[in-house]
Length: 133
Image (cartoon, rainbow, N blue to C red):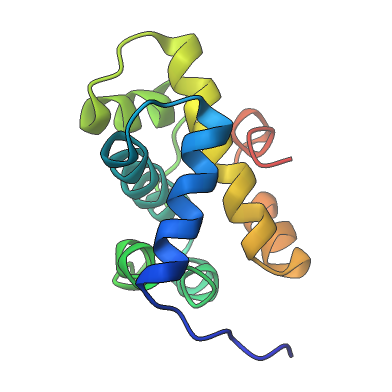
């Protein structure tokens, strides 16, 4: 097993800035809110154990969004997943929401070991897992 890296506010800023750039967002605050909403939605989509496995690789603030999850995953389709994120970010355009959520998940994928990403994908419905692939 790989050692979990130490996380601090510098790493949160690095994560959020990467999302901001990939999603084409103008403000850091908007990207930060998007990160939190997407990670929270992802946390409800996988088991509590898997959420905890992912959480240990993320910056502290995002870790908290996943780390408190317990129990079973909620099953919902891509539209509901994106609506859940959009409700917290006030993005109403589904195409934009999908692009933005994909940006967060792409950055997450680069921070988390491949086996954890694979385990996460295995727990998601196909149309949702495609956002992570």
